[in-house]
Image 1 (cartoon, rainbow, N blue to C red):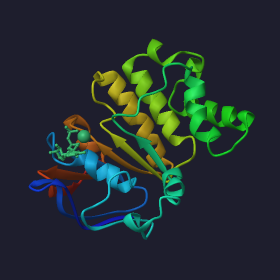
Image 2: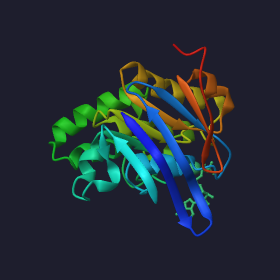
Image 3: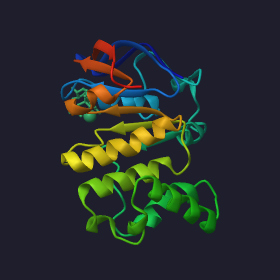
Image 4: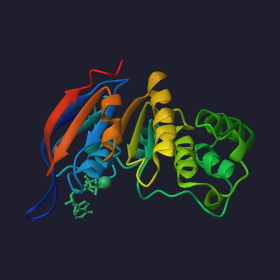
Length: 224
Ligand SMILES: Nc1ncnc2c1ncn2[C@@H]1O[C@H](COP(=O)(O)OP(=O)(O)OP(=O)(O)O)[C@@H](O)[C@H]1O
Ligand SMILES: [Mg+2]
């Protein structure tokens, strides 16, 4: 479903964010992307979404070479993806429900349909009672779960989550991870970057990056 073929990303002369990465991720996997700060985790996720382009090699999603996509085709790719990125905050000037409805509205759906689907998404992340709360009145963990609801309202095939449990306590981190695992159980491919080692053994596969290279991958013995 996702293929990296000898992918490198060079931001400047001697600064590689990724170096000759080849990997293959199948439908329905729950991948944990591990590795120290600066290893290239965010870069790898952004490449799957076509936000960053490789300087060498190919990234394919559903057989399609991302860097050959016309910019007019990118929205179609993005609709298959649920993105939970580090720098995509909720809009603080409107309530939770409006935030979650937004990605549906931009596809041209009616307000009524958007509201119905947004409420279902909020239920899936365990926040049906927070629809009319303002984002800043929520805890960090609740905000992160709203971000997940917003990412999944268009029923993506793939969820990309960059450090979704950073800054959360264990209880909230567990709820966030539980929500993501529930989507994986429903057949959605999930790729999650994290420093949080306690979660590594819950993944179907761990990919460990260091200095832009895949240094290790292993299958968890605990995951189903
Ligand atoms: N836009 C950019 N311009 C120049 N260098 C960049 C850019 N984005 C990332 N880098 C560099 O690429 C390398 C990989 O960065 P990346 O953000 O992918 O790491 P990361 O594994 O996500 O780190 P963290 O765990 O801190 O989020 C780093 O050395 C970083 O400084
Ligand atoms: Mg990062």
